[in-house]
Image (cartoon, rainbow, N blue to C red; front, side):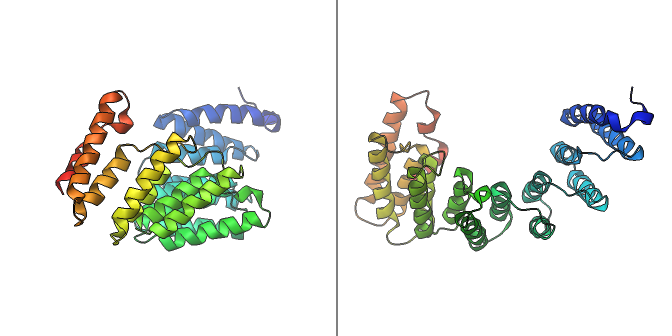
Length: 305
């Protein structure tokens, strides 16, 4: 039982009651959490669980979830409570995944707002905004690159909270890959290699990262695409055999190479595509439990192109 006469001393009790309610995926539990928050404010307690409630609203994934979370953010500001980086990040991520036509604009509004309010964006904020850009914008490549450069420059100037991590580089690499810009994708991969060799990345580039560069070449449709993909495929095999990187070609690598040869008009390209399919089939037979090397319907479709 919470006694209003001793409200201040019971602040931890309120918080301990609210947080469990926010973890339950039940409408009534969330309503109860909001009621407890209102009770805290009625008895003069400055709540410190609003960020938790914002996250809980968003996890409900109801049509009004973002609106409810936005209302709580506004309420924090109205009560002179500085929203945290976590609160802003939760909302930027939510807008990035939203189907609302203006959600990307709102994500950028929140990014500008937090900087104006003196809340310093960290690496997760930049990554969330770049990811939103890729999901929502028609041509995200330029904006993603600008955000990435802004982030890197700040880190190089001494802001350790903006150190790009593997997640950040994956997003940037994905942007260049989807845009069909193999030159930029290759530069990004090389930078990942350099950063990991200096111990500035927790993980070395993987098969997924190398595949992103190959896919950039495939999407570019340039005259050098097939040759570059074939060369990249061989490098991946070499690097993996030397244990330099965990980049052994998988079904996606084979699929990209097969598609490149299938679309090529060079002599013998069709036979190379068929040989790659045979190699993948043999590999899958040797490793029947390894789903990463099992041919898919798309793999066979690439041969038929």
